[in-house]
View (cartoon, rainbow, N blue to C red):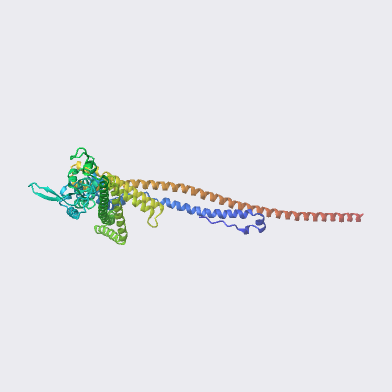
Length: 554
């Protein structure tokens, strides 16, 4: 840094300074240039220091943290949870059930159960109760036919097989929407189990009464199809005409019952989804919380062992076995202390991981409402979703004192880890097939495939990040070198201006001395002229005296 050259006003007379104001302006420029030069030199030194501080991280150094984090933390969370992944996700959806993809055997058995007439009739308590209610209405004379709207109370006399007369009800119980038709609906079997389905079909909104002859003629046929057919009792009439069906009244009875059934099936489906989503989300969240905490703690111990091995290897020739063991103990103690001091952060991170996987469970469920996801796709969705959430969190809420460049680097690392992990999960089936091809049993391949793909993912991510880090360091160095050159030019320009200012001051000083010399010479010239005049006057006087002397001698 240079000293600012201050104008020495004692070198110049006040009159000269007053007559030459440009000198003061030059001095102002000089002072400003000196200040800029000092700032430029400081910046120049700072840039040189930054260039010296840049270190290109080696791929091995990058591998250390990446592999440790990937194997211990990500493996603990995503890979262990992935062991329980299945086609279609954790919750069976109607779409998947139609495609015979189920989350558990209970859902499979419920959806694929065969129709059993007794379940919907004699073996259902609600059916028996409703039949008793219809008989009571018949006894009271208040029973109405659901197809004709007529009163069908009372009894009828029939002859049994032994020839004896006996009384039976005029009516038969009739499902407005048949039990077989409801059972054949996929949504019904999906949402309702055997008992709740039978209870819904036998609700008073759906189970009514019609004349026995109508019921026997109609059977399991659809009402609209049956009533338009020719009656077997009278070929000149349709069933509707022969049995006196009130089409408008009957259609309303069936429509109202169907709306009631559809509404309750939708409620049952929503209840099933809600219950299973709650149960599976709690299970996934709990596992994730536990695995995440274990993973974070494992990272600390693995890092401690890794650092201990590096330090022990470096000092293998100078340290004894006891001293090397002390190195391991020291790093382990530091890891324990670090875990103790950061337990809140560990719990917070574990909770965030659990929340992410709960949201992921909901996302997978939403996708499976319209499309079936395979097992590996479920794992890939989880990894991708976790990656996106982590990246957004880092962008929106970075740690304190983190610079923008550091934040962007962190986001880049998260995205690289995520893409590599998704890719490694996509290769899981291929690796499994390869291991089985070489003769390994399935139970062994299932154990090996996840750590193998995790390790490969960690190495690939490390190589990618190492290359990216080197490229970034080289680019930053190049940029700083360009800045350094530019700053050097600024310094040179300031120094040139400074020198010109000093030279200008010297010229003005020379000008003043020249003017002073000229003034002195003028004074000397004036004195010499006066002396010449006095001498000439003396000579004239001398001549006069000599003239007078000559006259006197004559």
